[in-house]
Every structure is written in C-alpha cells, then in structure tokens.
Length: 101
Image (tube, rainbow, N blue to C red; front, side):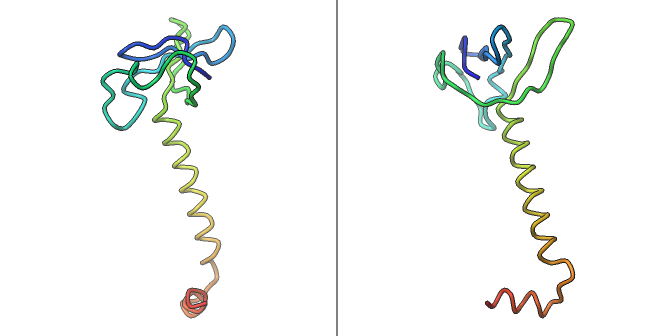
C-alpha cells in the first residue's frame, strides 16, 4: 500500500489497483499529527488496517493505530499463552528452581 495523495488533514492510500482508502490524521499515531504532508509523501509505502467500509458512499477508512493495536494485542495473547503453558502444572518449588537455573 502506498500514498496516492497527501494533504494536511489526511491521505489517500492505494490499497490495490483502482481501490483507495482514506487515512485521517488522527489515525496515524497516538501522538497529535497537525500536518500529514510533513510526515508522508506521495508514493511512500505504509501498512494499515481497514477499519470501515461504507458501501453506500463507497468509502474505505484505514488506520495505522488500529494495525498497531491489533499487532500489540496478538503479541500479548501469544506471550500470555506461553506464560500460562510454562506455569501450568508446576509447583512454586519448580518455578523457583527454574528461575534459579
């Protein structure tokens, strides 16, 4: 995916040939972005998540924050699963011995 148009309030992202999505400035980062054109240029590549498809108006809204949030959530779930697998069936003594080694 890459930027087709960039202005101060957002950008048009080419998702596939003939399909574009709109990235609002507020969906770029958790920090405030005043002018998108100072961060991105036309033809820059970016990874985004599709957050809304409006069939009536034929609009697709995309977000970098949603993509980052989904990746973080998946990483936390994986970490929690690994942690619970390591602890399941273990006694406190087993865990202390493992930590010591």
